[in-house]
Amino acid sequence: MRWNAWLVLGAVNAFVAVAAGAFGAHGLKGRLSPEMLANFETGARYHMYHALALLAVGWVAARSQGGAIGAAGWCFTIGIVVFCGSLYGLSLSGVTRLGAITPIGGTAMLVGWLLLAWAAWKAQ
Image (tube, rainbow, N blue to C red):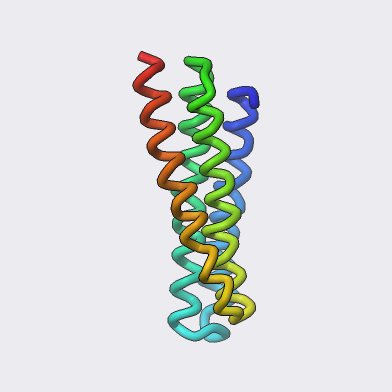
């Protein structure tokens, strides 16, 4: 994917993360148990962190070519969908089985950070 597409994806995800955070803080307070609200807020927080990571992917990709930077972006994207999505779904639906896939998304995020570090190192 082109470097500017990563920037767009990061910006769109940052928008969604802010919207999710506001929805959690204003729309879900009093409707969810404190534990479920905390899960939702964790999803929104990590969503924002990884939206910013996608912006970093775009920045590095604009300066270097290589498979590691694209792989980092895809890992962050998969992590957002699986980790944050499972926390949002768990909180809103109460289906606790969704928590079983959350670590898969977290692992994708961790791999993304390692790949981003590698790509940035190689871009020197």
